[in-house]
Length: 145
Image (cartoon, rainbow, N blue to C red):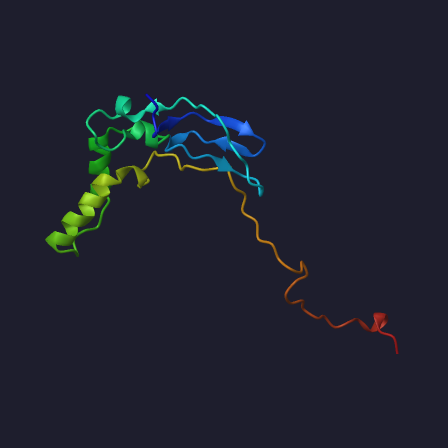
């Protein structure tokens, strides 16, 4: 059976085109300006069901690369770091439910920050000259009378 969504290994396809190592749904990434047509590429995805048998959030060992914390312990740590005293019970329950569902995106002590090399930040300016330059008085020896 063909898996439509799963864990993809890092796979190089063409110059500037690759699949990143990630949980994805069969999407390729191109870092070039040209359109690239991909035909008959077969990538073996690891089935998510093998990893997550109870239909809950994917275990943190996949989603985090630093300190590996069990899901329950991680959820408790996230909950302990929340400031919910100013909220009413309905708001508090809503925030806790969202944090429970997306606990993998919170940075906890010991977690490594994720990064990517897929893009490079650059600020292109029209004119590389300085916006303002300070005018200094010329010494008398350099002045022409």
